[in-house]
Image (cartoon, rainbow, N blue to C red; front, side, top):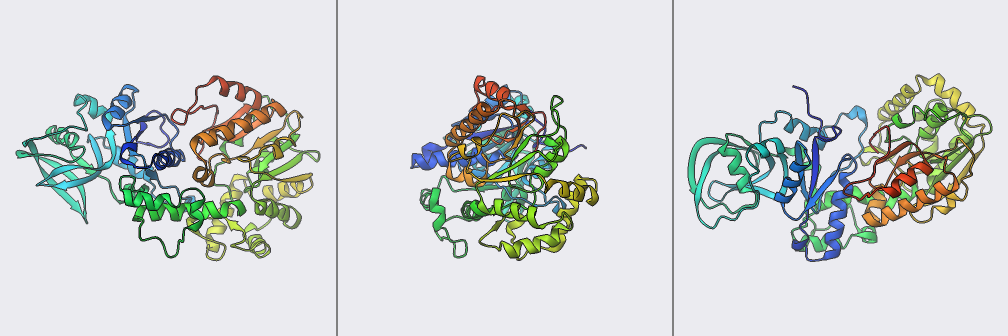
Length: 508
């Protein structure tokens, strides 16, 4: 049986965001919970988002749009985002959901709560719904009051540890008064001989509940929003916070405090978008404007062509990223990068320099074997060490410029340096969709920042070739600045239904 790919199979799954703002006492916090839920979903999810204040409205809309599956997340539920090397082969949330969905033998899955006395429902309305079964069963309602006992299917309940893993039909009935959310979906499922699955540990670990429906924990969490995160103590924690809140803050804290001095030795994103230039592109590159991260700038030069007159312009909001790039140009010969990293980290030590590594690791505890594996994967993209070395030796001879510039605050420090030369290229990666930016700025603020940036670069050079992602993490590639900006302005893009204009999709 082929595995359903809920992450990359566009059109198979829609994300539904449940508006529970009425149960959150502070409107500002409710808006932030909404922002966090939507933003953190966009690391992997690219399609439309359906938003409503009840599950039934979400499912009805998702069904009308023709999707096969719907994942429902209430405000304040966020999908975990952690960078892990490919060779670690970690099972992430999307893999776990795809494996759950593949048999297709159920109507609904979620975190099941209840017992034989109270009957059953779902915790926090966090669900995966099979819309094909939903339509076959005539769209059973999720929210349904039941003031009196009724005949309900008697269930066989299978538990794993302290969690319900599956509710199975027995063919018998009993009188109960159900009171938990989602009981009617469970009843409809069992009545049609369909099991109801509980989310397994990988799914539960992949979705963090920021306790949006608990006033005390919401108040505790709200104290760390914005620059309040700077007061958070990862070592001692905060007893007023829930376990998932702590896990989320532990994930966010290093980025919000360290990223302004961050250094990416490796690129998290693929090179797939830059391997083939636009057919109309005529090498060599006149100027390449790039964030100072990994070797993707070098790969752009290699695939698009460069010569001794090509301007290499690095920009970054991290002075450390620019300083390490300059040091590499001046001191590295293009061979044995893991060995050179030792020299680099002595010259730019942690923690003053925040090295963006996987698994919350630092240069002090990352393994040499992992670094070697990453280097070998990089060389594979170049078809060997010799090709990379030859490129590097030519690359260090071209003129370099280094601009410290935060695109979210004032992109003009960069855009004023952009000339109208033909065959120029810019790669800004995911500068408008970082954990740092997603924490400190709202969806609307980042949209305005992104539009300002695109407007400025399109005016400076409408023929500039674009590579990166927008404020919703939608890929931008194989397009010129002028034509992209014109199409963007004609669109009615929102954070729920973003504008897309790319030939290649990749995870940013």
